[in-house]
Image (cartoon, rainbow, N blue to C red; front, side, top):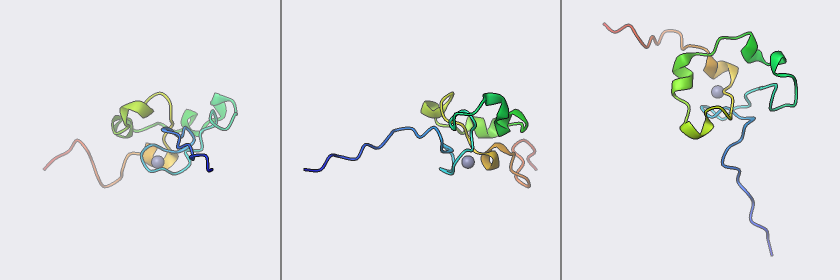
Amino acid sequence: MTSAAKISSLDTSACPLCGQPNQCAISAGLPPESCWCMQTPVSQDALARLPAEARGKACICPACAQPHPGNPTHSRP
Ligand SMILES: [Zn+2]
């Protein structure tokens, strides 16, 4: 008899966009003010790409929080 492995629908310690560890202080049990996101502005474009079920629950990682250089979203030729 094997117990089925439970796959958590949402891993709050992983970035919902890329699946890498998001380094969120809150998910690590540290004070929220020590989190990187308090010093780093999070791209609105990245937040807009978050799946609805992850919003307000899982943090994204520092890499995804940065606006993509060389890929401007609002300047079209
Ligand atoms: Zn990420």
